[in-house]
Length: 167
Image (cartoon, rainbow, N blue to C red; front, side, top):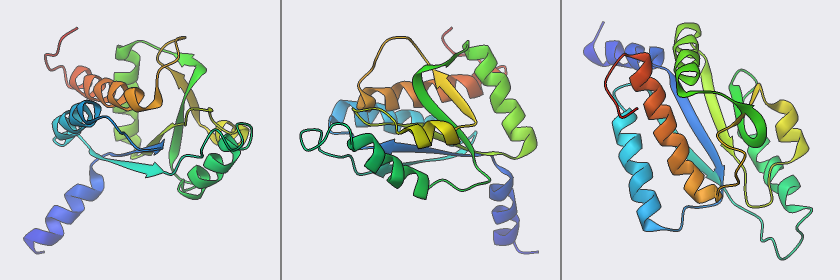
């Protein structure tokens, strides 16, 4: 077996996470923060961020989540474990998210986090979810929430490994 084949096998066994988000991050300071946490996550997981175009809210506020939802669902595979970020979702402490990360690693789950756009998520996306997760009862701008999400995923990996991090 070649070194490249061995490396490919190791990469296939590393937990895979995708963040599927509506819209682009427009603020440089947010993108720099997101990039920093993505870099910090590289030793723990294969993580990537995919964006789907957002709908202009001025055109049709009620149809925006539906159209965005269609785009999101086209990118989610049936075998992927889908977590949607929703203010009405389940709230849990960082330690419980860390335990979930360990469970996902052990079972080899491919995890997809979905962050909706400014108008929210379509009912079809919420119905497809394996877990609806909330980080707060507060509403956050979806661009800022990407930074919050990658930081929390990083925190979960640090806790799961018993490594020091700011508690």
